[in-house]
Length: 317
Ligand SMILES: C[S@@+](CC[C@H](N)C(=O)[O-])C[C@H]1O[C@@H](n2cnc3c(N)ncnc32)[C@H](O)[C@@H]1O
Image (cartoon, rainbow, N blue to C red; front, side, top):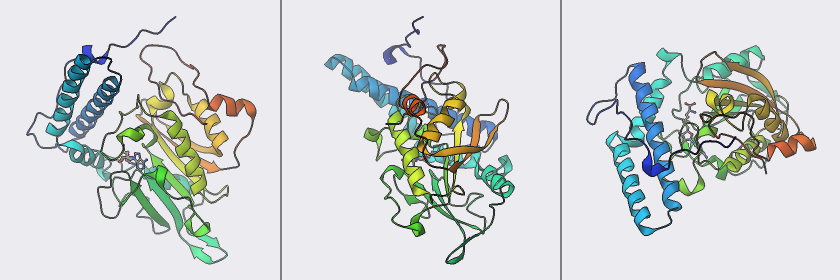
């Protein structure tokens, strides 16, 4: 049965209910930070939809209606305090009173795997080298461990100790000194903006509708290349539950197939009932060249039907 088309952007709902009426300070309660974060996700999603509709406008009158709509959304985002407010809310959401940032889980797993220590190399003893993509703070739990040497990067660095860098443009390592033992990619894949939106803070929504999904496959391949080619090298990947559990084109099993083709095998997974995110840990391996796995990783095939599904998927080319 054909899927019901969603309403055109021009007929969509009124602005989202605003839990942070203009002028109100960012509250510190869990409820308040969560409503700030979800309001931003809603606004950013509407902005991405409006931009997409504008780029496809077929007449100048339609374009001017859509342009006005886009300006209203941008004004609403600015009225909420812009990216600053969003990032502060996200950082508060990671504070230790709330159970800490996602790297707490990574550290727990490193302990379980007996990897929570420095490494012995030909050259002596050295800390684990970690690359953190999409870092909100330079002081997360992993970065504080004495056996970890963290390199935090972000497209929009909010701190002088976070390198402002687009991971997709990061040069490939030239030798072992530049390779990493761990890459952390927590809540980033669902957040990678389309190339045309780079340079600003124009992110797609929580489970992005207009992300270039081939770019996400590219990102996973680049992560693989940043790691030491060893089964002790690890990828810590955190995704919103909706990415694998409510997507038309993605499931946990399909993610495992895709990552096997890139060259990763899952070693740990944590998904709490009703939890908003799923934590996973993967070890480096040689890419799986099985033709069926390669083929299914490059195509979008419906795995679940239903109008309320999202379109998240990762495609390998
Ligand atoms: C939702 S935040 C996640 C922050 C944190 N890692 C966490 O787990 O809460 C996503 C971050 O990824 C960053 N990001 C998205 N695409 C990126 C890219 N290509 N290179 C570097 N950072 C990127 C964004 O700027 C944003 O700060």
